[in-house]
Every structure is written in C-alpha cells, then in structure tokens.
Length: 239
Image (cartoon, rainbow, N blue to C red; front, top):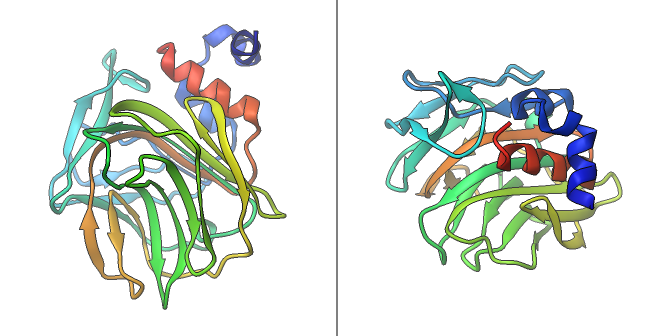
C-alpha cells in the first residue's frame, strides 16, 4: 500500500519527524514548540528566527512531534493580536520553485487561518493559508490564488503546497494531493514574513487568526508526493 511504502522510505517510521524534515533541506523550519520566551527558532539552513508578538500561548500540547520531555507541543494564537514576525530574507520571498508544509489545529471552520503571509509593496509577495471556504490556498499576490478541493476540518491537519519552476501547483491535505493548478511568476516584497496574521497591500497588519501551529517549513524546491506523504505519516504515527 502507498502508506506502507512511504513509511519504509523513512526507515519504517523510526526517524523523528524533525529529523526527517531537516533531511529535506528546508531554508526555514520553525517547530513552534518553545515553552517560553519570544524567539521562534528556525532550525533550517537559513537561520531565520522569528519573534512571538503579544504573547501567544507556548507549549500547548499537540499530537505530533517534536517532543520536549516526551511531550509534543505547539504555539497557540488567539486571533486578536498574537502573531510571529520574521525579518525579510531573499530566500523567504516568493519564487518558483518552492514548497511549504505545516501542522495546523483549526478551532473552527468557515474562517481564514493564516499560516505564512508575506505581502506588501503594492500587493506583491505570497501567502499560504486556509481559506474561509476551508480549502488550502497558495497565492502569489498580484498574480493568482490556487485552492485545494477538500475542506480542512476543525482539529489537527497536515497541509502542504508545492509550486514548480514552471508554475505547476499541487495542494496536499493529510499527505494526499488535493488539487492542482498553475501560478505565473511572482513579484517579490521585502516586507517581513508573518505567522497567524495578514496585511494590507502596503504591509500594514489588518487581521489575525486563532489557531495552533507546529512544524512549519519552507523549501526552495519542489517536495515530491512521497516526501509529503512520509512527513504526514511520521507525524500522525508519533515518531
């Protein structure tokens, strides 16, 4: 079965999810598993640490790795004024190819949840979010929005999206492909990358989302379907 073959590719699930994602070569990998402080550490190759702003709840229990003292943890945002900001770096800007993944806990359906948001400079940049229609959305601002086919339910889900050098986009929900389309070449912005918040076309924050997040990453290559499936299965099985 495909699920078993994906597990075999990562040593029958014995590899930790953190170790597996690091092996994929992320330029940004935020575990969001801190238990105190204001630093959202990036353990990817880019060193793009973020800043927790206005006191998100840290150390919230979650069903997936990585584990601190045997417990999996996530960051919880209230949808009022809490978010993470990450300073602009060229490697974090919109480009083709790129891939994004994260585990998200949605408090409710029918609302927008912002996972990664980088917008400004007259509507340039990119976003990875859950739409108010509950579908996964990847957009290049000023270009187009691509959405998945299936609604992301309340509770924990693994979401991902990839865009190739030619602009071919695939959305993924819980390890399975969930819609395809295309995106033209993006325009980039030097505005910061935000987590759990959105901005206007000028880069001013004008909204927040209530959600829990764990293990978000950005890569500047296309993850394969097998790699995304494996990341989901290792997390689901608690490796």
